[in-house]
Image (cartoon, rainbow, N blue to C red; front, side, top):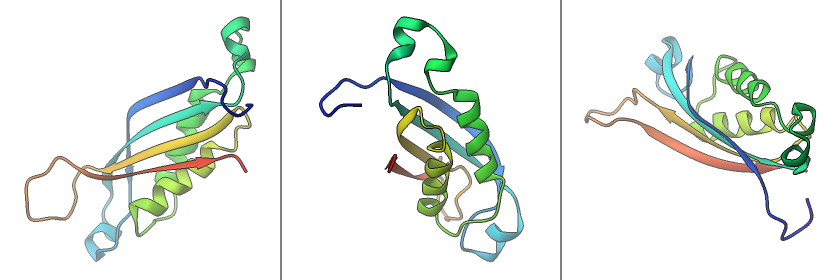
Length: 125
């Protein structure tokens, strides 16, 4: 996409996946729920005119890539996990950048909170 051009974006919200990630021993032993949001900036805008899946990113493939990372080998940090998801999603050349939010829904803190999370943005190299 040329600099300054408008970008179209696919949004995936509230993807729930069970994985084993964290630093503490208990986090490394038991699966726990994670929630992801994906903001996928498209490299081209052809799909607007063509109405053809071949001219855009396939969000089902992006979801599958994200799930594969979260259900795969453990990461200590949410930052590392989110970055790995972003890089996996960027395997689709139709995506120019990916912003990935990962929330741990049962964080190991002694207070009542809904989640802890991190958001990273990665771009095609």
